[in-house]
Figure (cartoon, rainbow, N blue to C red):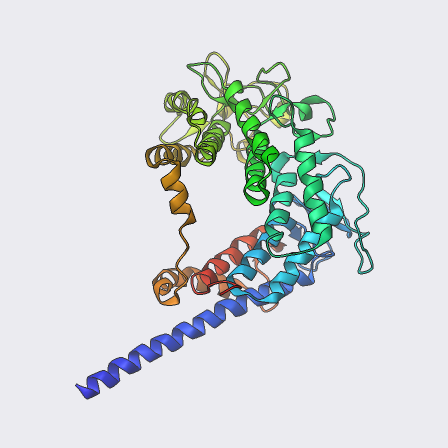
Length: 450
């Protein structure tokens, strides 16, 4: 029996030693990749794509070349990387990541427009070590692709761990901008100040209004100002008001100011959009859970009924359906201003660049609504507020199950701390891999205040 005890103890100790080594390897990989990314930042900000020799910098795609003093705000640019640093700090308590959070926050505040929002790219050449306050430039701001909303969301999150007057000023300016740019009916445009054309329309496309509503809920949760909740509710009131009539009880990508589905770019015809409808189901459910007001659920059954009658294949929908006939419709950059009814007739390039057909998260949005309705807001909130176990012995099985994936990520990193994708350094790849490592660190750490 004594010998068996010795053998078992030896096996367990070896397992613990291996686990400790793996934990150290995860944290070391996080630090190594973070050190490389910070070394290529521009005053704490980031672009979307870098050439391997770092001589060329781009935004979302390589046709969007950035100047040496520009950073990219559009995800997965500067705010997305900043969220990585914030998550790493909360998971490890390492002040190195807190310094990185401050760098990103400062880059965004110094890149903020005078009116309070952000463009897809901003120039931070005026951000120097001697700079005490930002010199904000005039210019229009975008709600497209979570640009302004994502920047503000990060700054609000950073406000939990930073105490800087310039940060407070930037957040307050940004939230005033959100209120100022909202139309009286609760909608937001794609750009503000208004610039003409479809940019001024009430815009759901690319999550614009959904992200605005989510941001105002975050602001209300954090700062408890009634105006922020009122803004979110007004946004959802617009969702209800703009819903299509049965049997096409979905939503369009954008609406003209007379509340009609409208053309945007020359290849984006007006129609009822399955993708937008899924997003609005989720946003209305969010408002129901937040306010406990069942009026936000009332439009959803008819929207689901339309979706259930409109698939073009198993778990597959067209993005757009013609108003009235409900026929799938498509557009083509190479033949703008024209509506196509045959998917095969649009160019091959168009079929791979826009996402004219897909699942669009429709199943998960419907499931989210059904679960929320069944459980109800009080129980849902109790579940969301339940503290995550911080006992490493309880979380070890979770981490072990992900070990192959984590090891592949670590092994894919080169000696410089880079993840190279398609012969380039891409913030998207960094954000994805670093967040996976953060999730592993979270499984074992209790956070900076442990």
